[in-house]
Amino acid sequence: MRIYDIIEKKRDRHPLSKEEINYFVQEYANGNIPDYQISALLMAIFINKMTDDETFYLTKAIIDSGETVDLSSIKGMKVDKHSTGGVGDSTTLILGPMIAACGVPFAKMSGRGLGHTGGTLDKLESIKGFNVNLSRSEFVDIVNKINISICSQTANITPADKKLYALRDVTATVDNVSLIASSIMSKKLAIQSDGIVLDVKVGSGAFMKNIQQAESLAREMVRIGNDYGRNTLAVVTNMDQPLGNAIGNALEVKEAVKTLKGEGPSDLEELCIVLGSKLLVLAKKVSNELEGKEMIRQTIENGSAYRKLLEMVRYQDGDISMIEDTKLLPTANYILEVKSTTTGYVRAMNAEKIGKCALSLGAGRETLDSKIDMSAGLVLNKKIDDFVEEGDTLVYIHTNDMVKGQEVYKRILDIYDIGDKNLRSQKLILEEIKY
Image (tube, rainbow, N blue to C red):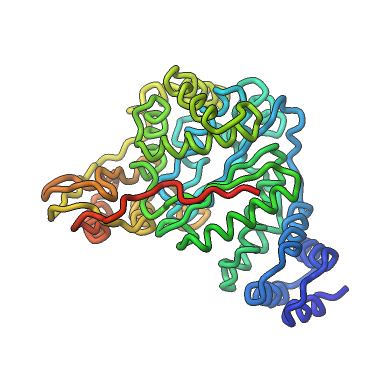
């Protein structure tokens, strides 16, 4: 078998066989095919697309390029949730404890943030001492004891994806549904959960900018997951504005704690309840989503979800006093209030631009080597459809650099579109996709 023939075949719009896909993925992962030939193949795939079978074979080949995480020693039905990335998305910090408090194991391996989208591990590391670098046995042991652990992925999971993604990133071949779906699902399926709920974001702050793209990606990932033998479903959710009010690591932890106590933003709580109810159905803990929603709400009302977060922090060596008193979390030296210069309704805000403002304050990383300022970020005081009077505070800027803070102040005023009331109010859950 020759890579030249595989490139030629895909260039001429013929589907690749399972054997051909296995060959190029394994040989590239092993360093036996040069970047320039895989670049040519990726462009042929980007232009001519892949069939459902090809996409499944690609996902399986990427999984087989590395280790898988056997969770069979964890008692019960294990569930996981994945978001395609957004701004202010702290759902894992809230949803995990809720699910664990319901008696369902939530065993999650997460990643770090890059660019304007935040990473769960970075948020957890704003808690002093919190250990995300667990061994496989430590991870399993903690989940068996308290039903929840969140840790970093091992380097040996899907190594082919890391190489392929790096090449896609510099060859303008990222934006292809098959390539995106196989990249995301290979990482999820390599960790052997029993049920997966996918939160596919769409809008200005998401990778997918329109509903058609998002639905297409969601359907592809749901099909791959179920064909692989995992109960998988998806929701498509609105990311035209940040989720919740806080953007930034310690700020999002504070907001997660508030939400677990029933004091958080309504959109963040709503999404966690919806996602949680679906996970409980997949885990066969409840017979329908209405029962699931009620069970999730009870974990907030009786404090069991909050206590579960405390347990996880304690078991992973974090300082629980920072959860019990969130004022002890990293705090910025300066807080600037962005005041509205006009009166009206918030018609729109660009979530990606908001996220990039937080990034410029140090709340995210431009590259994998960038250092994060755990205390930096933004807290939104007004969101889409809210009424604003001139002089009202739109956003609180948390910064340790006044020059950067003043720059972001000006940018925020340009991002907010204030005027007549929208004819239709914002909707959070846009679509639900099952197999």
